Length: 106
Image 1 (spheres, rainbow, N blue to C red):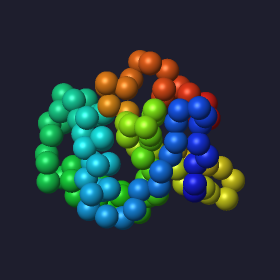
Image 2 (image 1 turned 60 degrees about the vertical axis):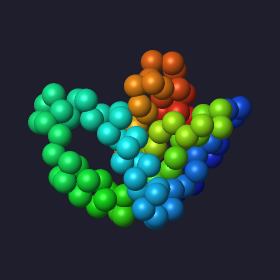
Image 3 (image 1 turned 180 degrees about the vertical axis):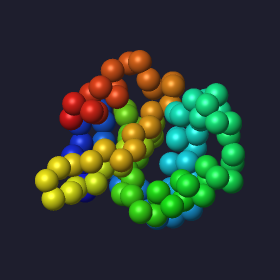
Image 4 (image 1 turned 45 degrees about the vertical axis):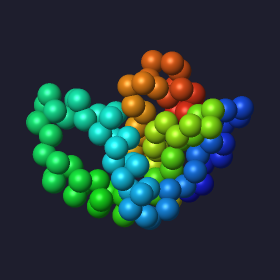
């Protein structure tokens, strides 16, 4: 699913299935939820990377661009009767400013 832009300052760019895009999405995930995973289960790099690679292959990720800067990722899947939010990551440096709320409301 292509996500329409959120004027005036947010766009969503579909990530291609390239190693660079996969690594970008992984680093965003690590920054956004890595600290929470570490506290709960510890960080197993091989497990996290393998899990992410599978999700990245199977899920249509988009880069969240805010004011011209890539700041996060989102993945939505269109199903027969609803839209499913699969993944949504904003690093802590972009949390608490209303951006996530704007995107979810969008």
